[in-house]
Length: 236
Length: 182
Figure 1 (cartoon, rainbow over the protein chains, first blue to last red):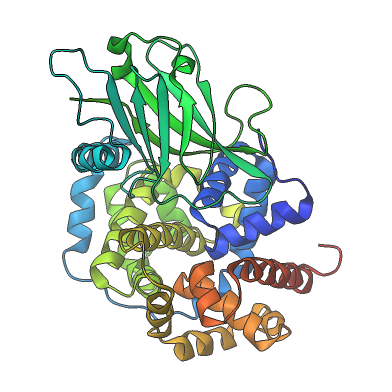
Figure 2: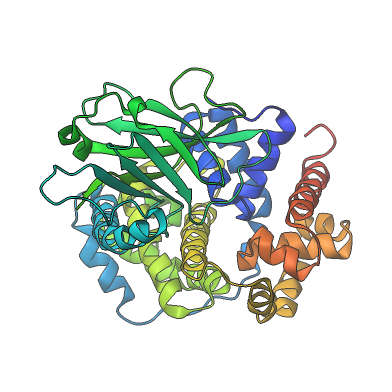
């Protein structure tokens, strides 16, 4: 697992996490550390304690009547339902987004137009994103040409000394499979890396992008935070 | 008898609905103030409050009075929710030009925010030891939820410089607050 390299880095990451100034990738990493690293959790708690006096200075504002009733109605939900509802919202959003993205991907990647109808689907596309945010990468698979085409949409460069790595998850794989490093330019990876060219199994594949040390994961499994994911869907 | 917030959290951990209602009455205006300063829009601040009290309901048993007050615990949850909501909003208007980022950040009432920071005891004394711009950047990031990009536009420096500047300020604050051994 990636850990902050030095006490200064740990303090800096914890302090900026509390300030709220980390970028989305760093924030995801901080949240992962918060759950897994007691030293980091302790540093975050100490920063919350140090900076909390600033909250004391903020003037109270009366919330609207009825806000508590809305909260109370949701208390009956099972403990994790807030999370589940959020996931369902993401899923709905993802479905809508995927429809729009499919058209966008078709025009961007350009190899979908000539697809003969009677053939089984050879083209798959995934919009790789975080939650409800816009896609960060588009990943299209063309089994006939044997390529996985990765196109950056709204990706930012990884922090220095790091690389983005693309993984295939699911579809019968016991563990995530590395498809290679991706960058802020068009990258074509060999589709053979997806192991099987049987289109049927592609339906269950999810692509994930993790933040790894320069050159990719040293272990063959994701070591950094998973920043974005997207489900592979067939395109006709 | 009125129960302390810490007692209320212990009761909420046991599923006491009256206790969460009391906790809400005692703390919601404070949290609304905090969320509104970060989010600027009331409906977004209300969303942050809803999420905050739902988390308080679910996680009350994890509250450790040895690590800080109940209000500080709630404020930390609330700020996290507000910052997440603010970042999601920012993503929705991604592609915003630098000029717009700057305009949006400048529209906030910085003077008022900075005046707030003057009355917070040891922290204020340590903040005062930072150069003026660096003090402002820390306070506005914390209270207004400004991103590195917004700070870069406002204080006219590259985003990477914002990061190193904030971290240097944090190191100095920590040394000042915890003493040299800290």
